[in-house]
Length: 137
Image (cartoon, rainbow, N blue to C red; front, side, top):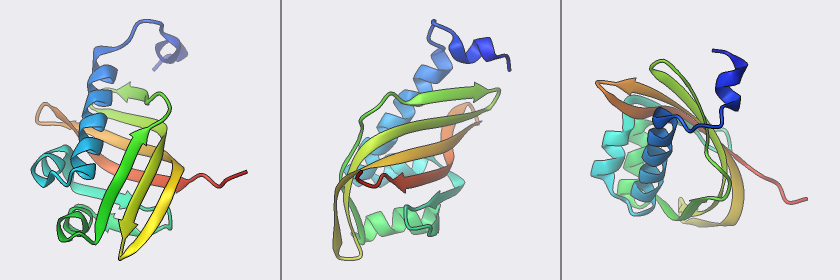
């Protein structure tokens, strides 16, 4: 892929679609809409949490379903940057995120997110997700 592709002024429809899918995914996770979340996460999805724990799709969505993980706020606070190459895409953005995990409330703080998407059966699904908490200066 040429460097010009990443510097293009014109928005790419696939990039815009992936941004919409990511925002839909965040809304589904915050509202514990597991039907939508299940559709947007690939069967082999894996999350690496800010503390370095790896969770499968079943573990991640199961924690939300049981209430062990409850997202109170998850809002992008930067542009969602997207790079597409064929049937794969990577996104990166920062967010404001607050949750309760394992009975412990994690205060509102900023995070970096890097997510890998793949187009499977004509639709974009997240396959890998990594979050890093941004330490206060």
